[in-house]
Image (cartoon, rainbow, N blue to C red; front, side, top):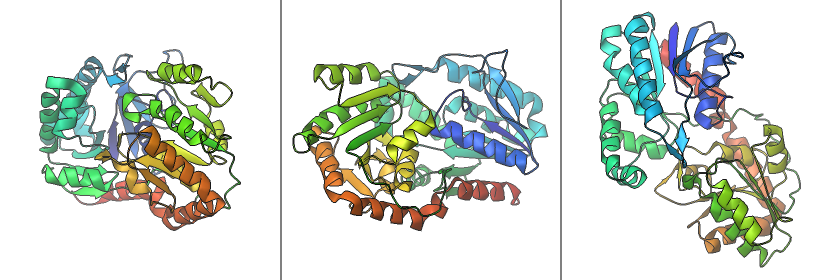
Length: 380
């Protein structure tokens, strides 16, 4: 089959769950003998070229800064959408399937508008479906337009995939035009049961430092927990517009010897730190999935997430079994959850590893890839 994947980012030139998903999907399809084209923005040096073996990578838009103050800029998605529109207008009829991320929506609009003319099947990954209220909060009055564009994208005939029950419910409630399948697996690591390592008194965060992640909630929560367990320390991996605020918190509370914020580091270092942590803390208010939660639990490290209407990561945590769902990101609630993970000790680590062993197959990347590829092969 001839398959066109569409996403404006390309791993490892940018790092994120969606980037990893499309890279893995492209490599798997190519390994299975399919002809794969990946439409994206140029994010690599011209002298180097993209790193995606056996896949034809086409840059349909120039290299541009995607974020400002933790928010997506409007210009790059518009240019990318126009680039996708031009490419599919010229070459769309050669593809059997066009598989695109829903966001940013202009590329999906392009693929949807040309679907009938070009005759390809449209497959869409809905990592998140935002409510009208969240759109308004995110973009102000312009958010109404964002919500309308999201709804418009649902009206194209498509095969929809999402990664949580939360967003499945929203897709169905908003009347998406086509079948919806929930993919539960994005985890790439080993699925064999393992004995969890003994924990060190370290709390870990790994992810982008953007407002939705609420990374600035971690230091106050750790301070609260240290009132009862003074040996607790923290490691806050990642970077982003809120990192400066995290560094100021560490300095203001004189925690340089207690909390480390090294920025982006090699994945091996994150994994080694995480597997011996007392817990992972992910205080996000909004998650489409929460892959780092699975990565932590797979090692036996319990995860702490925060309850909220837009946080799909809570679907991955059972209170007292593989972590805790804090009622809020306040120092009191988040600090209490850290203390509960510490007090539960090794028994919670064994329980977390057992939980992962029971769910390993459905949480694996391979399971999701198999579902998608089987969908490609099915009759339209």
